[in-house]
Image (cartoon, rainbow, N blue to C red; front, side):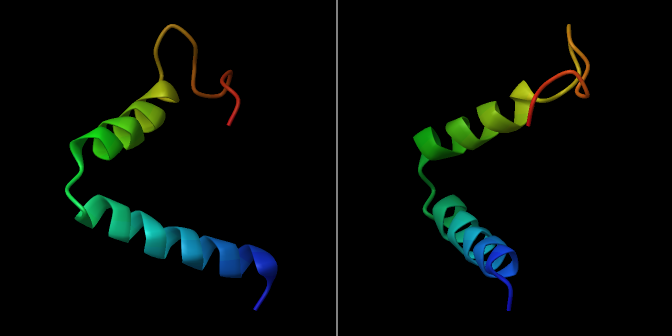
Length: 49
């Protein structure tokens, strides 16, 4: 297994655990991070990811 695949698997697992914890502060942070890159005054392509 490559390091990238291993990291992505670990990240997915931890994201599921975090979201299952029902912590509103963490969920708001995830939502903010997701919505920052949505199209708005600047296109999604313009924003750095």
